[in-house]
Length: 168
Image 1 (cartoon, rainbow, N blue to C red):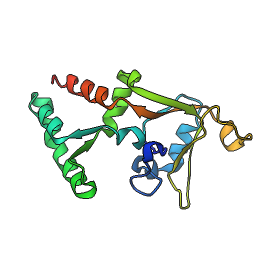
Image 2: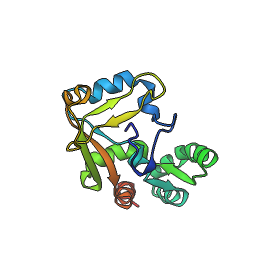
Image 3: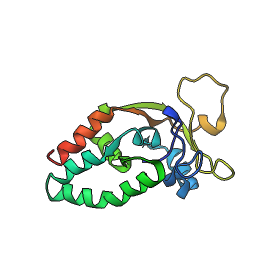
Image 4: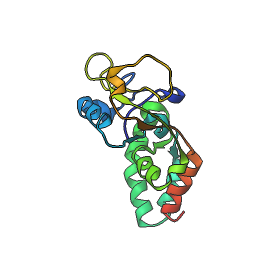
């Protein structure tokens, strides 16, 4: 889970363009996304599209010890989002990374090289050059492997799978 690629208007959560995990070490993030192994990125573009509202969290909380624990630890996070965004719930940020591995059919992925801006006003910004987009050769991009970036998610499907995991 990291990044924000601007789909559906989702930009950074710690700067206008940077997501917190990436901004924590943009140089390391750039090395990961340009390495010769496959990477799938789930950024704010999808994680902020899946909201566990208070009623949903309460249902999970009533589903046994694991759900009660999740509900208890999510209260602080929920209060933060209520104060900072007026959101009566929490985003499913890190949980979606697990869900993407379990149920990749719930996600739409776009492929292309990814880079992370390191330094300056755009420090931590994640940028993808989507495959098939016509533009002149760009060595800063074209020498790196195409990576997968989640650009859409079946939010209802993800929430259903999450709830089923807790026996709801």
